[in-house]
Length: 424
Ligand code: C5P
Image (cartoon, rainbow, N blue to C red; front, side, top):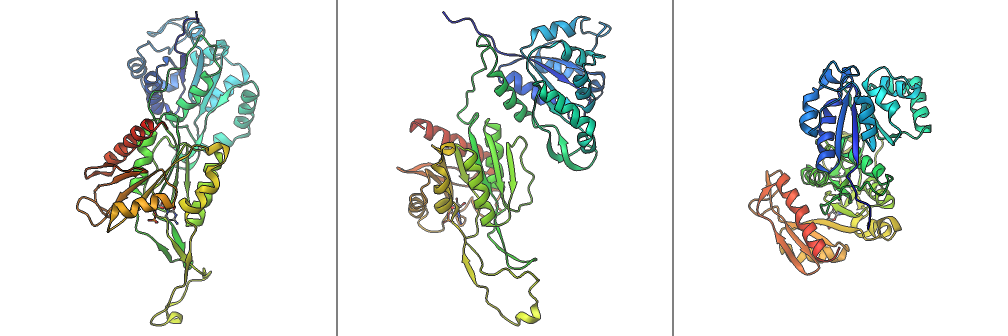
């Protein structure tokens, strides 16, 4: 008979950075995913979030003190370290990394770290200059050489007001890294089952328009806000997928928790980005971008002057690559994206279903989402949207007119339902 299994026990150590607030979400995600979680906090961390928050989220008392003065036990540092299968330090400050590198044990977290013999994952978060300081760089190297695992930091808005590297990895990314590490734990420790259809699936989503430059200040483009693609990306992250968003120029903030985010300008850039992501490996491609079919035949390096152009002028256009029709087939047969499911969009004003079905076949898509912008309850810039999902056997589902966020969630559910029942 197989040995009884238990869910991995995670010791989450929270140190003093503003990213500590994101560790509350991490604690919740870990618990929801089925891990047992106990939390230890440095003094500085308790200035950002209260131990009570973690206690409520994990259902366990939180260790904050070495000497038993506060609610935590004097021997917590040994007990917690013995209890845990895996330690996660999030956020890991420059100070904690330095202490860990040199074996300094002068507080609850640094002491637990020294007493913990198992796998360690650090999610650094700090100011960009602190991150690049040779001391921090050297400390990270020491820790990595000793087998400590790292996730992030990523780039983005830092609390000090700069946009640079130093931001703690998103809780969803840290959860994925924990899952990866947990795979190496002894067989008696079972990783909680991932349940949802989208959990762990690598999903590439394109969104927004492409801009095809005429000269340095003018371009040709389709009308697209990117809202639908961003809503799909957000819904896919929430459903547990590992999402890469390739976006044309839009005025939207990328959703949290993306595995990858690339901003491109032209159709050629988008084609290259899609090719690269597919080569790295993807399970699904959802092509919601409004790619420009044509681009100016010549790019003027200087601004074209009105007085030179006169009262009227003609712009010569040339075909852009069709990403779905021409670029994707070259990359989908590779070993990394074998079995790729392809979903496209079609905007049709007459014979919507007939034309979209032909397009689905011509561009070798598994599914196409058709919509008619002239129909009521749909359209450009409209709050609500309506789509018809079409597969090889015709119409699969016709949505109600709904806000794009809600629609995105339903689209993913319908795709999951259809694909699972077709044996995908
Ligand atoms: O042919 P049509 O442009 O209507 O096809 C729409 C679908 O094809 C969308 O999913 C869009 O993202 C994709 N497309 C593409 N490359 C282009 C134009 C459109 O992949 N050059």
